[in-house]
Length: 597
View 1 (cartoon, rainbow, N blue to C red):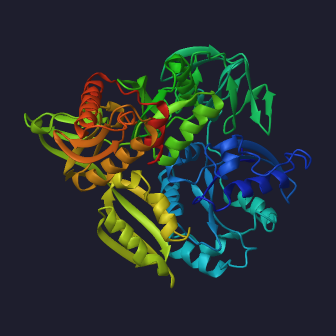
View 2 (view 1 turned 30 degrees about the horizontal axis):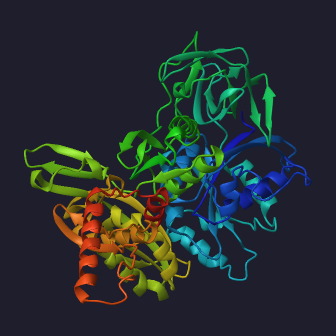
């Protein structure tokens, strides 16, 4: 065990975690140059296209140190975006140490600080690493100052590397071996192994990725999952190099995969503890926390025949993405679907794309919303995240919405534009502190609902890409919430209802009405598209009717003949409007709901 090192790489988004993982893999000779490709651990197409890590990925690397000893390095590459912090939390539970990466040109950023506190929560040994020292804009001294002042770590311990060129990677490997601790565990204790991830294989069933804390796992062993109390026999286990490499057993302190013929996805919970059936552990491994979703949206299949496929796809995705939650839902306009909870908008976007790509589904998503606490007039307290469940305004005493503490780090020259953006989004208690001569951290409290739509995009626009954003949930505060309904020809379309602050209700309703007017086909009669709060209309657009010139055949004679024909046409249009049903095409929902993604 003394020659095993379990560590992960944590950092703000785009600080070079995956590139550094590539260099470490190459330096240890775990992959030949012929098989190598950039972002070698990122297996999903979406990750490679967007250049972000979505899933934590693990790999075992053999490393011969300068003292001649052979070490086993279990590396976990983690995501950097705040929406995937649940992945980072699970990875940290499986490690004794972490490399905290700081970009030499950007310095310490919001998510760097958040990840530092996460790592300290699990009592990990931290090794600071300054990356991108080959850039012309790199300022290593400033990065060292920020590591000292903002993170409270020893700046002279920081290893300076360039993950792109490979400079300093050998020194980093030596630092990993000598400065990060080996696993602590007792091989004589009953087996305890933490399931920190899982994936579904159509031929082998569920493949569990686990970290053995005490005892050992071996082929043929009868195991028990402590949370679900299900018993299985281990068919295969081993380490994850680039491919899965089978072995006879996984000793204490090691990280690997286990296949035990688990066919039913609901039998597995990520964060569960594997123990021996005959000699079980006294208690499961503590420290695992369920993810708390903050953004909610309903997912419907475009064709109702795909409902069963969507249910199976969500089950399999939930296994691979433990932060996703879902319940059955239905809508008059869109049929049966699922109400899903996500950790943020990027998480929602990625889940939708994975469902469409990996499971070949066509989907429609409702507008994202947050959880509101509604105090009824009779004293009952309800938690509501779906506009269709919102009670009548007369029965509501008051509503509370979730607030966040937003932390934005920007170069000083963009401070005015960022403050204006925060004020526009109902930000309050704005404070700022100077991290260095030209870098400012701005903190303010704002409603989570205001961040949902396009706050992150707007922030990147006004700061020319230099702004970094992180947030944490604080509390619930009273708000003036209204339910905006969209009416087409007088009929309410339930899939487009939304809960918004009263000040934002009219612009949001106007936007929806205009989008629908662009996509709903014209009829023989005028169609009114309206936004309403209760019985009060707050926005309206009209789709004009197709007109036939009925007076064209009147080439002479009295004006009353033309008037008589026009009156007759008007009556026909009115009758048509009363009986005419408007078919809202699927593209209309897609265009309206995607406009706010």
